[in-house]
Image: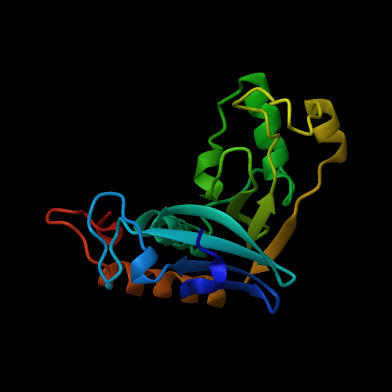
Length: 206
């Protein structure tokens, strides 16, 4: 088992002094790749780990291909910088997971929440990036855990109504445009220098 302390950081999305997301890559001996033999150089299909640090408590948030974990903010950041990811008025900031859960439970898929989703894990905290009142917010919040699966006997099950009554986000951060621009430039630099197979269409060419 690889611990996050033995991995190398390639990028940090700083939110406050003690709060950030960080992209970690294992040493070569522990590195894995979806399709190719790993090398020292970062590859688009190398599996990296996204860690969330909340008040100095680090939690493994997501594992996925490097191009996906860095490609998602690469695509989302230009939109919020241009104020093109505006959250509807009826959804207060900090409650995207709540409304997503309610709509999904009702089978109401008219509103496209995916356009605000930055990093997503099934039945785990979601990360949303959006504009509200001409500002940029990053929200970390938990959707109702049993939207897409039945509860297991080991789960600490609670009803959707209980979830709605007790809902509160894990954290909501206001992101300055300078910080968002810095994140975008860092993503571009890393994505541009990663190894890729012949014919691979890089994110910046979308």
